[in-house]
Image (cartoon, rainbow, N blue to C red):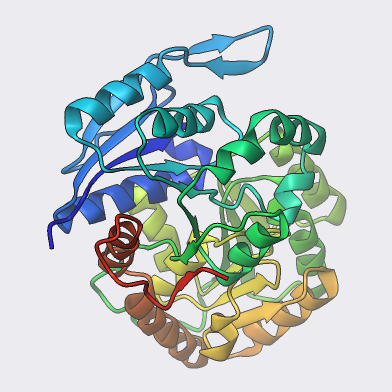
Length: 385
């Protein structure tokens, strides 16, 4: 059965903005490799790299200083033109709240095309509360009605699917995780007893990521021969708050902050890590967890992320959000020897290869598209309840 023609819409693809800027291009490339004719329409803001096998349309944007927002007046007309000329069968929109999301819903209705929406965690409870009054206004003005026009929602976990139901969305939901690149080489055990072991946090420096509780937990444990490395871009000035707490706790010799890393540089950080930690207050998925597992690194994360599988597959710790449980997991993890942590990492790598390779995710996504177009049976992971 021929793969469909799909137009993806996303607010931006600058890697500094976080997960969707990495996962949306990877998804588009993966489904193109599976034979789908794939277009991306996005705003021309920041870095906007090409995607192999994918036709890109970058729409000129302006910074509205008075409104403190990016304005893209021709996004809807550009999207409609791409859909008409390219023979689009589906519009797949990523994210919510932005004017580009509103434009995607509008164009889908105008052209009577099925609309698939991936909220990308932006309707999770914590995210809804963050700057909540602005989101309440947008929800009432357009976002709720736009979402109700979607033919299909895509959640990256059962947890996110449940939260989509809790805000009143009743459309079918395809539960498809994000994917990751699986490194080819199996990591080796480094048995140098004199080397410094490393706990890695790699994500945006944002309040929801739980860096401050992590620092308090580190202060309690203070494992000898270990350091905590925080890698990521500052968002909203949160780095200054993190640095103040490091100084207040006297952790300057144990904790270092490094700028965001991408590509080979990011892979190198995973390669050096003995343990990965993502202590988030909210995640619809948490792609860095999957990346760490793919690199053979055991993981500590919170139950506010959908990563129960790290516990069930014995490749990490899935703990309650808070200093006490984070400190307990850290103490247990650093007390293991290198071979024990390596064995956990090997189990995590097998899990990532089985469930989170981009080829696997692309096949699932195309199956969902075909179901929307009435060209296939409903898969078991597509919820209609």
